[in-house]
Length: 328
Image 1: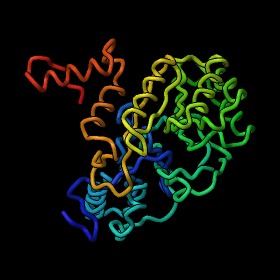
Image 2: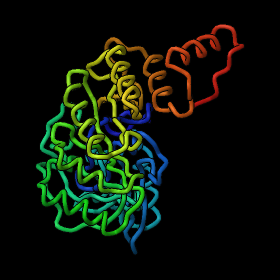
Image 3: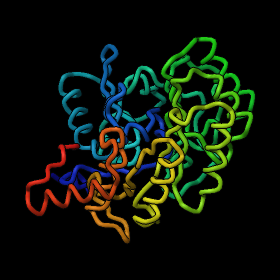
Image 4: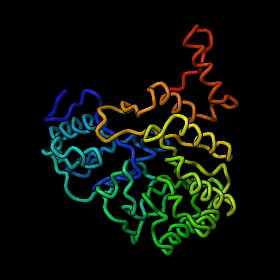
């Protein structure tokens, strides 16, 4: 199917980045990683009176979002649409209202919230500075467990303390710093305050390049020394982007050796025609699939090493006798 100059035949375009959306505020990283935990899967729709709203996070949802807009318009609604997928394809949605600020986040996950917008970084794989601009601390926000700030640690100490204090005052459980905390900015003070939160709190870091190992290890140790349990720490690991399988495996295995769990994130370039269609230099599709399948499901595989997994998988493919449970 063709519409204007956008080819929908391969399910759209997607890009992994540390951020949220231009005018319709929906977090992006964990939505891509999983569609459970109450997330909408990247496409939300709701009505208020005679107005219908469609919010599309992922570019592979562009066709579906457009068709929903068309259907809602035909049903007599005034249609407003937004989200990263809409912002990146304005001509596709030109017949609908894409203006204004609409808080779509509660419609993607009712337990998620922003306390700040924007970011101080300009990562090459991230569109947050372009879409949201400079870091801005919000004056007010609802107290909810899933914190979706792009760079919470870049905020002032006063703002950071307000976030922690509000969570503590609300006796909030299931807290998750969903978008990850900037290891370059994490201080002993940050770690101490994070350790005050309940022990089911998930603190997410990121390790995108082997070159940043000292920074990552330093931040990890600060958290542990402050009293954050290793089982509370998750680490986003970007793979398939200016790295090698050996580089990625080193980072993933190092995190496991530290006693924590990695969250592998397969890179998706902005101009990809379909999800998981990009294969970086030095990688193969099979390698990327294996890395994502194994390292994102370590609890399932139990005592199997990555080499064990590959042997079982290859054995299954060669003679059909060794069976690996379906993980897709």
